[in-house]
Length: 292
Ligand code: 7UC
Ligand code: FE
Image (cartoon, rainbow, N blue to C red; front, top):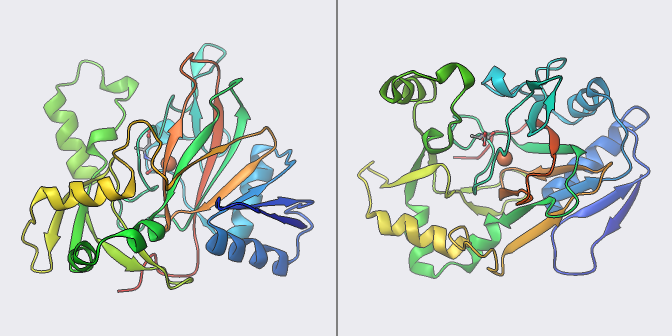
């Protein structure tokens, strides 16, 4: 494999000549280290069937399927399908997923170490994802806010971005809301944690899922503290101009893998509803998500 490093301040490396079938265990380890260090790795010129894509995922880590079957690929349940294209008149996967700032599975007890996406159909423009490195955000915080964040935990829930399923039509909204709380009760994570591999401190708040910040006794803090942290991160900037926001474009053949501990992301969709399909895999590694 050939690694192309960026010569600007942007995150990520680009990898050419990589084939998961012939890659050695050392190559795989190298790719993982590149993800931890550079946060985003784009593997170029991939042409993979759903089975091959999953095989690639299993080489990198412990693949976990999404908790809701509505997102699953018909042949491989591990693949989360984001799609606005009907196949034989049948919706496959879910349209416009992840169009809000979040980290994958931040609302679950054990979020993913890595997320990977492999676009299948791309719109002609506006094809990419916004990312923010939350360890950079932590470093940029004023000292008093750092101290408060370090002595806090946050509550996260999927409730605001739970997608209504076809079978939910005509159900009372209260029943659906109760189901969300039962199936995915809120989880608590430390507001900052140390990345188990890089040792960086990460500010773990997302606009989409984080709804409360508590002190170490579990007493709610002023909600403005959370708003402040989100503002510092750039996640409240509706123009996406904030300096730590990076837009990363896709090309067909790219498999993009990122460090889901360090980064928050926000999917970007073409405003003209052109067809767009991506296949996502989510993985755990051999480390705890964070050290306590
Ligand atoms: O439909 C979606 O945007 C999925 C979202 C609620 N969860 C993605 C994840 O893995 O956290
Ligand atoms: Fe996501």
